[in-house]
Image (cartoon, rainbow, N blue to C red; front, side):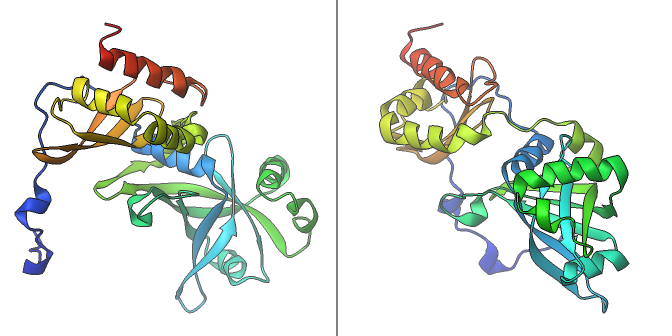
Length: 271
């Protein structure tokens, strides 16, 4: 086991977390595969890592599109170094981050997909061309130039990081089988709306459903199809809690009903 340097050890007060005073109902969270698929489905810009002729790691910004199973599609020119690199060494990785991170960027989500870039032909190329055109309409023109090739990144490894202390890995089969979160496109608006207009409801939730009846402040920091995460301030210190929806939300419009039900339950209006 590696020993941390003395100056890497946080003071005790920084690690003090207020434990729940009351039981909290079990919750479901997105799996690492769901987290990864959600990030890939939401974005279209990524950092591509390839290997240059002399072995130097080479990172570059690229556009990508995702097939229905989450396979990333790239359209690359050999006029660019990354395009030349892949013709010689197909091993590559793609790093995709949250499109619009809030607060500390390192406390936001990102995923790295590692595998081999496969040049596509025939029907596979036609499907890639159609998918990629959604990310880059101009590819209908430049994608047909002789120096451009459509690639599929055949994923071998997946590493998801959700922010500080939130990270995990998954395998390719599990990644491809997972579903992107269907409410992800409405999450940022829902979080902003809850914090700006319903802070009193969030506080009720933290007190009645989140295990902290002495909470003095609650802020929504994440929301997904299964529930929401709150940062909570109490006289005993800072903490966080997760509160599950009564039923998973299946489209962005479902978030309103799901959060209204939580607010009513926190007030004791429903069982």
